[in-house]
Image (cartoon, rainbow, N blue to C red):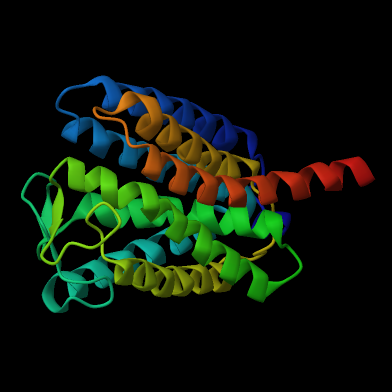
Length: 257
């Protein structure tokens, strides 16, 4: 019966998740250095999604981890499908043909990115506010939205999508972030409902969120050509804050034992 609450032996999934995380870092480094990084960008997302699913399995069991991941992928895809047709909730934008395969004008890899970072953001919020469901939902939605401070400017650089009415943040409309916050809140609520123990701590998932924050910050600050200190600062501070809250809570818990 204990297998219903956690995987019988979490070590294999943890080792797999760690290996995928290291591979993701290597792919991110290659993405920053490669002159045509489209294929490597998709590789990063695939490794991110697989690593997040592996780490989620150690905290929530495989069936619940798969269910949560799948729910977020479907939700992210639906939001993007509606978005490219109506301009809601993110604004008036469209994808180029560089990311494939696509379903209904939405790259499949984008939906997988929602799934991987959705699990990582939820775990980061759960580590920071384990006792409060409202706190988890709010922090998780903000943590996931903070990632888009990096994501949109980077994808615009690569011509993966374009805004029909560019906004003030490196061409991104301010309303896009309101849409991200709304969809992210729904994503957090779905994960919180599906997993058996929403407050379960997953160091692996928090590590994914932290590594993504660090690598994106370094990329925009020093690797990408040209560098972008504004995006590096805005994204680094925002994602770094949520990562710090998660790790600080864990350090306090270990200190008080």
